[in-house]
Length: 352
Image 1 (tube, one colour):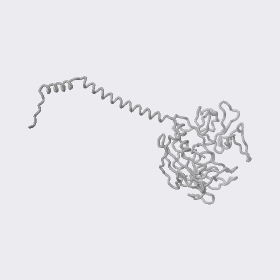
Image 2: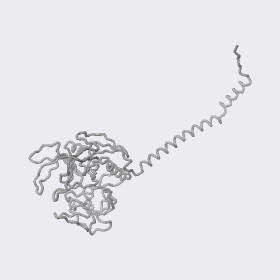
Image 3: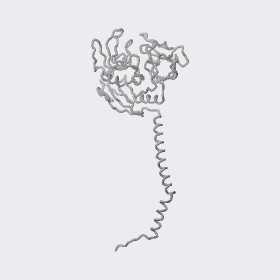
Image 4: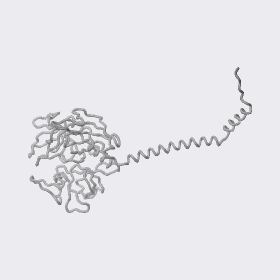
């Protein structure tokens, strides 16, 4: 037989009193509200600390190992692998070196700058004066001690000195404008090269205040390949194409190697007409040309007269240097670059 247990009236009464006291006591309610508020404050503080950490991380100078590369091809013809066979050797895309250059590009854009580009294509802004210590080669061509030729370059003066320039800056070099561009001699800080210099204003073209560089074309003169990359975030860049290319060969007085460095895309031509060596006779044209320094263009396969239709491919692409300074591509890839880059907002990075 089961026993029935009944709650004592005394215990039941105490319970009711306790419940009544809890419900009616404002201190208990306030304590609960206070704990909830403290919890909410803690959540908000954690969010602020997290956001602060993110902002601090964004401000930290980038290193090569911080840069993430992801392949999101927009041009898929003639795509090369990261490493590939060429004759009896192996060639590659030098991603570590490319990441170093991207980190540099990320870092110099951290703070607002007044960008400018050095311009003296075909000595359009006057032939540069001879530098203090110059070298003249067997063809009579003058260069500075760093090997930068006088032709199509701009003179750089030690700050405060105006008698003779010290070195030359290549056409297409990116700089930061440090002084007003309303005076004849302006002060610049090199981005494509090192140091602060004075330079005649006529060689400097100021860029828009809104200029950013989120598109780069990387040309490898050792491996004879080319890649296009576009910024996705402050640590991530997407690879849009990986193709063979052919760069310039040093063959004076007409042939020059493609110079290593960082340059701004300055102008574009659907057809870039070129002369036969040593003459003023048009020898033909190169399609979809984007100029980045001196007479160096990214362009398609050259078309020699009398032919006048575009040639898509050349067996010389990706082999050995042979152009006059330009970077040859399959014509469809040159067209992809031509349509994709932004003039005065895209960079060409030449590595070795």
